[in-house]
Image (tube, rainbow, N blue to C red; front, top):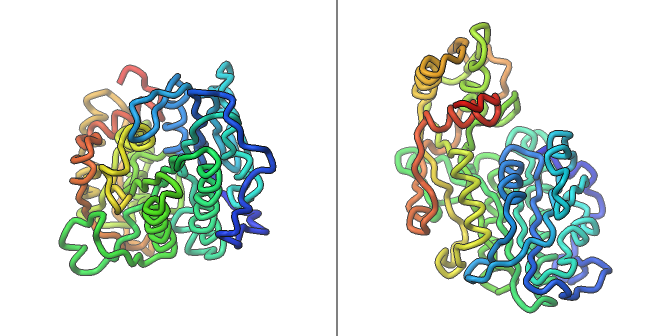
Length: 382
């Protein structure tokens, strides 16, 4: 979503003091009800998940066959767009909240069960790699301290509700060390974590804490490790931008020109937005912690694509569907206006754990492009 945490002052730096709760009393007066919270709901992944949840009347708790009525769906981000506001009109269970994810009092209120038996929190909000590198303290607050705050808040509410509450955290394959071994072999949930950037290090810390909080019975956590989730519209400052831009910045007009600062053969692990949302939805609802195991991290299904492969597919699908396509110029990194000059993420991942858990794993480049045309370009006939 939009970058969160610009006013993260007075952070809850007294972890373990059990003060991270709302002043409102916790009571269960909505038997058979669940409260769902999506943090980062205005962003690419968060909004696609939110739309899926908005159309859902009931939702289970992992490891249980019981379906709970969704009593409240809170969509939170630092800014909520008019697109989101217009869409949710007519859905009384939806509550929109604009605010700072590092504001502990606000988060304690947002995560309060409000009478429900269960709480499920999807923590998608983050400061991405480029901004986190430029502003270490902002990245630390949003990517590390705010998840710690939220796990502690859920820990306290879980005590009062009598069971661990569900926390679904989105991590990144950028947590892995970009060493020679990981460059030659697909990384996985047990691979050595030592990211070359602060963003990845912060996410790695939370992966470990999600597993430990779950081991202790404080929460029922799971960390979905995302690869580059394609295709995000617009222009933005992240390492993976060329893998979005080669699609988003060429489709729709023959006059578009995308200057790519990476070589055509450069490979990168990409995950499909539709699969990613399906995985998040399932992990929050039906995949038990015992099936996930002690390591609560799951690599989202992803495939390794070369930029040239993506570009060839864009041209093929564009021709098939009679959608105009611009051109790509392969430029030297120093000639590009993008801050991305090199890729320091291992090029491939293994998603066998996700497959074994029954999560959706199969997709093609064409699926990715057609989904972008349908959902971001509004070509509904695609």
